[in-house]
Length: 477
Length: 109
Image (cartoon, rainbow over all chains, first blue to last red):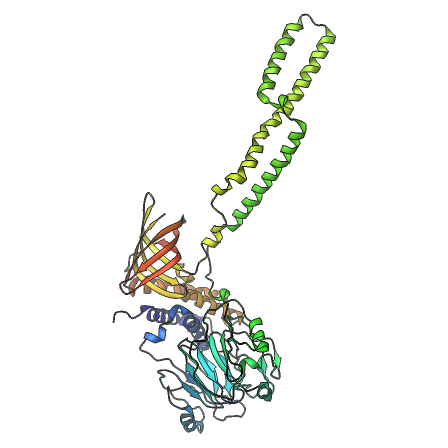
């Protein structure tokens, strides 16, 4: 089985181990099993959404699972029971569902080898991460090559409040492995966060349809989930493709505000499969095509950088602070020097300003004074004292000449500043998307040739994850 | 005690985020989250030591190196990672490595 990516399997086994390992801990704390399941779901969703396991389901033997819970009565108030079933691939749900509709707590499990999935109207879908929305119209969920799913809503508005003017937070997680769990519990919280590229076809259907729903409210999710959104629209006339990689819905919207609805708007027209072409998967700087102004502006306004999501928790605080302090200090020093020099120039210009010459003059003067001591009288001594005091003043003034070299230094620093390696690289230098976290067995250096013997490493290159048991490397510094 | 080194990986970060969400919604207490992370440390350390078996070679130029508290941090440029199956090139990579000399591959916590 060469070539099979070991990463997804490894991650799955780690997740399982951890969840099992903490099951007792949770029980001791008196925390419900449901919370543990939530944790597992959240964790798996995030891992799957990251590019780390891009090939998670492409190479894996398992098929993605879709869980659908059907209310045992459509268009009615939410039943308290929940049922889960998996959407079969390629099968038309209506046929399946009708058979199940009669029963409450209908449940069935199917494996789902792939898209597309037809979701009939009236189904309540909940994503794996606990997001819930009710499908009012038939939906087709397909998978594009761009790892985005297309929700085609051939009819009216898909998302409808579940019989209550309650807070609905719907979220559409990444659809590549698309786990939907729909529950129909009333008390269930639904979060609306679009977390991954989702392509919605909204065509000719207007907000009118959206406004038909009553009492829909979308609230800002309490938790700021990952939120990168890109919206791509093309051809506003026929089909509008909105690719959203995580959209935080705006604060409470009552009565289906037009601001929000367009996101969820559905096209009554049709239904071509959208391929991953127009979808841009980059989380930032999305390319927007033909964006209908209002809708996408809204989406754009709600974009948050995914940096917050993916940013590794850097344990090392780069030495930006000390560096900056250094800079400021050095600048201070330079400024001080300059002012002093100015003062110096004012006081002393040349000639007697020279330290060495003043010493000689002073010494000769001393000698002269010694000679004259025996002969001179008080008046002369006073004159000599004044002369010596003047010379002392000169010497004090001369001492300031010691700072003259600093004048040169001040002038030279800008000249030699090129010698310094730019210190600004340090904080940015360690900030990269490509990280290897591992253990070292041996690090060897010979002159500037380094050899690395590493082990048990997890590699992340631009989001994609790899692992190794051993790594040997060479580098030249 | 297993290294907490692997918390800054995709797997570790997603776990921490999930735990943070549960703490925010007050479904768990922070102390429990810490315990979960400790369990994660054990699990990932042992999984890496026992499950993974592949080897990788790499070559590049060393931009910076740092050794502090027995942790090496390197930044390499223009690196080629070579596995049997594939070759990966990156222009910049940061390597953080803890001391692995005393931990044999067959030790478990």
